Length: 501
Ligand code: HEM
Ligand SMILES: *[C@@H]1O[C@H](CO)[C@@H](O)[C@H](O)[C@H]1NC(C)=O
Ligand SMILES: *[C@@H]1O[C@H](CO)[C@@H](O)[C@H](O)[C@H]1NC(C)=O
Ligand SMILES: *[C@@H]1O[C@H](CO)[C@@H](O)[C@H](O)[C@H]1NC(C)=O
Ligand SMILES: CC(=O)N[C@H]1CO[C@H](CO)[C@@H](O)[C@@H]1O
Image (cartoon, rainbow, N blue to C red; front, side, top):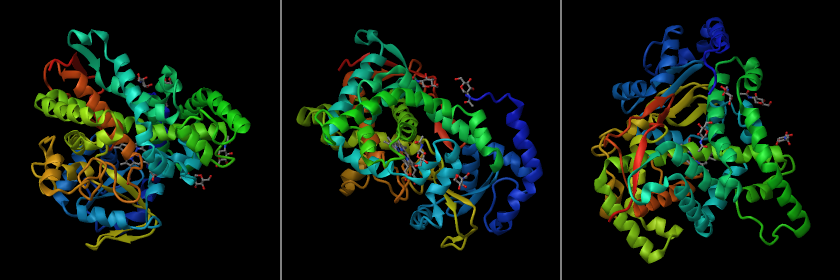
C-alpha cells in the first residue's frame, strides 16, 4: 500500500485544488443546475463531499437515492461531479446511449488512469475483450476438467489438514483469493505457472497497485500525471515482475510455433495462446502480452474473490441452506458428473450466488459512463459533456420496489422465480437486466461473467459437497466501503469441517 503519510500526497493535490477549484467546476457547473446535489455545491465545501464520497460513499449514495428516487442526483469528486441514475428506466436509457455520447471506455480510462496504469494500448486496442467474451466462454465445457482439477487441488492445499477430524480455521478472503487466482490462471496461463506463489502474489497485488495508483494519479493535474505514475506507484515494478514470469513461457511457445506450426501437438489451450494468436506485431511483444494477462487478472481476481467470499459468509451464517444446496449438488453430479452442464443445472446454487451478489456486490456504483457530448434523459434532465454518469446499483438492489423484501437475504429468490414463471434463463446469475446490474448491462456488460459464474459455482459446489462450514461465534463479519467498492471483511476466519451428513 502507498505511504499516505508522505506530505507529497497531500501538498501537491491541495495546492492544485486551491489554485484551480473555481476553474474545475466552472465549465460544467452552471449546466448541471438541473441536477440536485447531495451535500454542498460550494466549490470549497464540495471538497469535503469529495472526501466523504471516498470514505463513506454508501451513506452518500443512499441519501441521494432516498431523496431523489426515480430521478437523478449528483455527488462531488475532486475534479467534477458524478451524476447517479436511480431507476431501471434510466438504466435502460444509459444502456441505449451510443458510445460516442456516453462512453464506457473513456470513463474507465479516466477512473483507472489507464494511460499511466494498465497501459495506453489496453484502452486503444481492446482485442482481449472478444477473446474473453467468446473464446473463453466457448471453452468452458472442454476446459471444465482443468477448472475442477485446480479447485480440488487448491482447496486441499489451502484448507488445513485437521479438517478430516475436526473444525479448522480458514482465513476466508486470503484463501479464496489464492483459490480463485490459481483456478483462473490455470485457464489464463496454465500449469505450472498458475501455482507459482510469487506469480499468485503478483496477480493479487497488481490490482491494488492499479487501483491505489489510479487514485493517486487522479489527484494530480494532467501535466504531472506521467511523473506521478512513474514515481509514486509500483506498477512498472509489477509489470517487470510479470515479464520475468511470463517471458520464458512466451518464448518457448513461440519457438514451438516457429518450429512445428500454428497448431502443434501439445499446444496449450489457454488465454495466453489465444492472445498470442490474435496479437499483432506490437501487441505480441513479451511486455505487451504480459500487460494484457495482468489486465485480464485485474478484471477477474478481486471481483470474483469478493463475490465468492460474500457467498461463503452467507452460507456460514445461514446453515439452513446447506442441506438443500448439498442435495442439489449431489443429485446433479450423480447424474452428470462434474461438468459445465452440471453447473448450469444447479439452479438453487446459481440463485444463492446471484442473491449474494445482488445484496453485497462489489460495485455499489456501476456502469460508469463519461459524457462526450451533451445528453438529455427522457425526464428532461440535461447532462453536459464532460460529466460522469453512473448507476446507484447498491441502493437500487436494496429497494423494496425493485425486489420484494429487498433487504432480506433470500438465497432461493431467483430459483423460485424461475420455477414459478418458467422464465428459462432470464433470472440466472449471468443474465443482466435493468434491475440486476452487478455485471453491468448492455453491450459493455462484463464479458467474463460466464467464466466467473461457472468458476464460482464450481467452487461453492465443491464446498457444500465436501465440508460443513460455520463462524466461530456465528456472527456475520461486516463489510467495509471504500470509494464505490463494497469489500467483505478481509480478516474473518470461517470454520471448516469434513462433511458429516
Ligand atoms: C464476480 C466476478 C465479476 C464481476 C462482479 C464483474 C463485473 C464487471 C463489471 C461491472 C464490468 C463493467 C460493466 C459496465 O460498466 O457496463 C466488467 C467489465 C469487464 N470484466 Fe468483469 N466482472 C467479474 C469477473 C470477470 C472475469 C472473471 C473476467 C475475465 C475473465 C472479467 C473481465 C472483464 C473485462 C475484460 C471487462 C471490460 C469490458 C470492456 O472493456 O468492454 N470480469 N466486469
Ligand atoms: C510499493 O511497494 C512497496 C513494497 O512492496 C510498498 O512499501 C509501497 O508502499 C508501495 N507503493 C505504492 C504506491 O503502492
Ligand atoms: C493518453 O495518452 C494519449 C496518447 O499519448 C493522449 O492522446 C491522451 O490525451 C492521454 N489521455 C489522458 C487522459 O491522459
Ligand atoms: C506495445 O504496444 C504499443 C501499441 O500497441 C506499442 O506502441 C509499443 O511499442 C509496444 N511496447 C513494446 C515494449 O513492445
Ligand atoms: C494469495 C496471495 O498470495 N495473496 C497475497 C496477494 O497480495 C497481497 C498484497 O501484496 C498479499 O497481502 C496477499 O497475501
